[in-house]
Image (cartoon, rainbow, N blue to C red; front, side, top):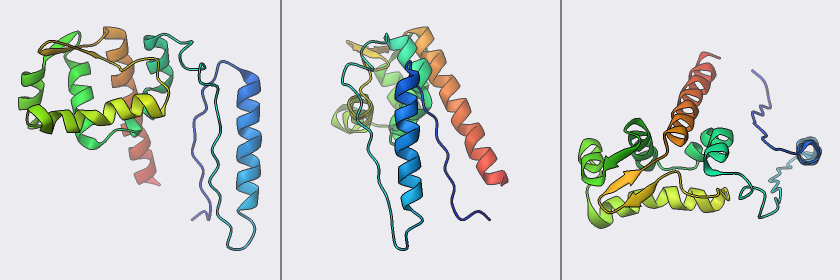
Length: 160
């Protein structure tokens, strides 16, 4: 069994940004060779980097990472919304998943808003319009593809 494992995905429209990221990761990993060392590396990104992308493109590039940021209930809710694109009633979704209503549901869905901020997404993957959630079919497709990829990753990890 390997002593160290590193799995990552780097997405960028700039080769220079990927090079900087790989260099920083190399230094971080190399520092682990020192006895008792542990490393946490944060890489800063220009605030406008994600907002230059439209919503569909951003979610195509970052769906897996976005889904990783969500609580299990928020992830299930988001994928339910995606599966019922372009629109689904809020009550319908909440009842189907047993998520409750009102502040209980809002608390569970807050994870999505926090992920948007943490990852500097250009916008939430869907919009609330009165009593329903609306999502662009292309964004829904990107999220479903991200969920499928995550499942495949978990299966590969278990098979090892």
